[in-house]
Image (cartoon, rainbow, N blue to C red; front, side):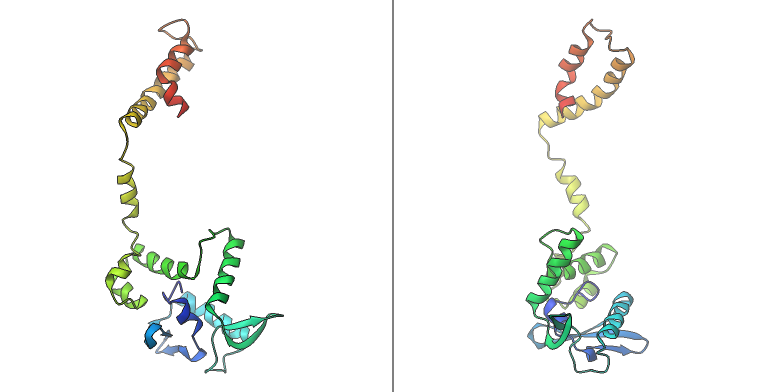
Length: 206
């Protein structure tokens, strides 16, 4: 789902024959919602993972068989497809073990793939084609390239009191350093500590 932007339903419905070679490149044939067939090039990392899975499962000869099958007691593969609920349970279990947020779900992988692609300079047009989105507006929702800029701009929203505290911090650091250098004796008054506290107490508490 990360490397192909596939929906969980399309990934669960894959058959061995849907993973095929075209020239020197591996491809995936995804059966998307509405009965649409969608073919995408296979990322080299994904090809390595799929080859390893097919070899371990011993299903290479069963071209019409399901690529991902339900597992029953004793880690025994069945002829039944994995239900979306089975995929979700597996993801939740793995996410918890990895310390990922509870909100991690099937769509997290598709969204992560699209977002990472866009952050690495991928075009909106190509992302739309790979994800099989009907509208580029849907694909645009995954574009997080402006998030950092937007966050910086939002942080500019500060009250006058916050601005005064910020200036106080900036002035307080060198003055406090001078106070420490004087061994706690302030040039302003005998009770140097009360002087510093009076001027910069709010800033130091922050």
